[in-house]
Image (cartoon, rainbow, N blue to C red; front, side, top):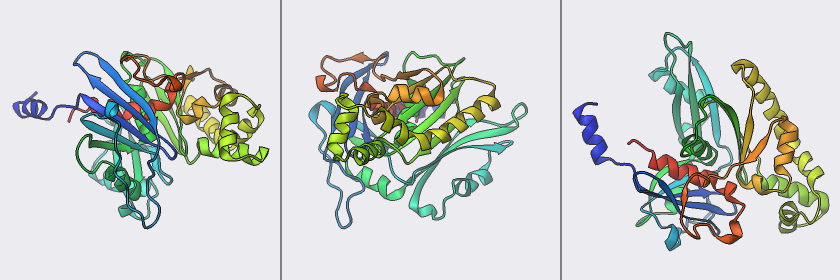
Length: 343
């Protein structure tokens, strides 16, 4: 390492106290993590309400007052927005400046100024690899601006902004103590309005797909079939007072047909087979969701608890949310990415 690199690392240190905020439609998943240099501690986690982005026409974003137990030095924001674009692209040979300029076209974007665009090189082409794999993403600009306006000054200060589904995938890769170097694992992050499905083969993403589908879609389907309002439908889905398994299967069918086709294609291309699927997000707490996913994909399904390998402070998670840890994967992943940032 050269002298300038060493100096840069000393000056620009990754934050050690971070609040991850998953800005969903109806509730905000909040996870505060702190590092002591050896272990990562869960200080507090909660589901918060009263945040809406982007605001209704003619309204401004109201600053978000973070509860004291969650008030870290920095905030890592994750946003689920309609129209979000995510693609895992294969580009012949090495990736150059000209290829970076082409990403706008590859993502299918008409107006570049309407989005915040970013990419990450997953694997580099060269003498032994014929292609470069690039994960590219675009977040609608109005959602990005609204998210950052929630924390206009003071603590916590915005540190990073990313797409909720990708934040969850970051958390999966960076989960402390986990070794997936030789396995093939699927991650299904089902949020309130967006669902992301990814396959990791030998710890590298080989499939990433994003869908405008989530818990709200299922609630609407259940409510329509049973003739009840959204709150009643949500209660049926979580408390088991009414069997909604058949309706759940129907609401998932269209999206999962696409997921099955993608899964089978990737398994043939990579000569691999899924060993299990990690289920997370708002969809994961729907009763029978794990069994429905298993039936569609023919693979063992496990709810992902992102806190299972952390040092958890006493009463860090409200008792009312016990068993719902899988809802916090995006917030956890956003905070972890910030703490692991090498700046």
